[in-house]
Length: 205
Length: 148
Image 1: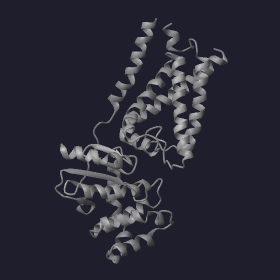
Image 2: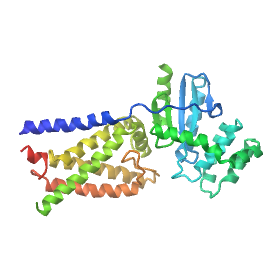
Image 3: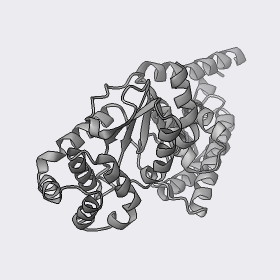
Image 4: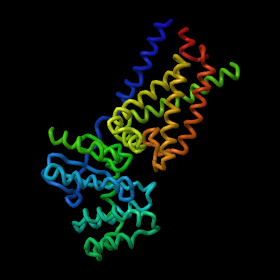
């Protein structure tokens, strides 16, 4: 009787392991090429970091100093690609912010615009219509305002954002910020604690 | 079947079912996302976050499966009660410290609010204790009974 129960226990312990291994996705969808304007760091760097981020997400804003720190420390060794992943269900202005950033990317000013969006996040995030804030940032980072405004009024310019978001979903990204260093995934504040170790491991490979 | 037997069976199904589902959703999703959820609680040292994110989902599935199947029913129900107690304490401490969690991370990619989840955990803790009390011998519809 005891042996039967022990055998049953063994089967019950093994079953979830086998089930998870049979259904778990171990390879993710491809990372599509991103325009040069949304890449920073050495173009020939061995290690490529892909960040899926939402301009209205507080954790994404909090992680930015760490991202800058890593770009500085591993200068010449890493390249960062920014991918839009606006979580529109919980962040009402996230798509508009990504649209504005995409317009800045069109004028090759993505990174200064990106930095200012995160630095001023608390001021535009609760607004009903954040357009004035986005135009002000455009002015601050010296964009051609006419071009910026016509781009911002053009709904077809959100196509690359939707493409990035679809890629994120295909890669089972459900939270922002999510970072991929080669095939290794780091989410949220874990990038701050484990990022350096993961980057160094990738550099050594 | 009398009322007590039905109650014992229902509590086992509920506790076991929820634990199996929660563990499965986390184990089949990217471990990095659960690790991020754990890190957001600001409760565990960073070296523990990764092992916990890999181990907890399996622990939930194993305990859930034992409760559901009714093998070593009483011990499994106590183990489930211990898990729910831990969840209540972890969630409660985050709420008390005013940590703004967008999700508790309990069911993988869910967006259940921590306030709602803590209530659910309290109910499941009560059901686990009830299951341990009712199913202390050989409960009906269980492996304990079949193999006895």
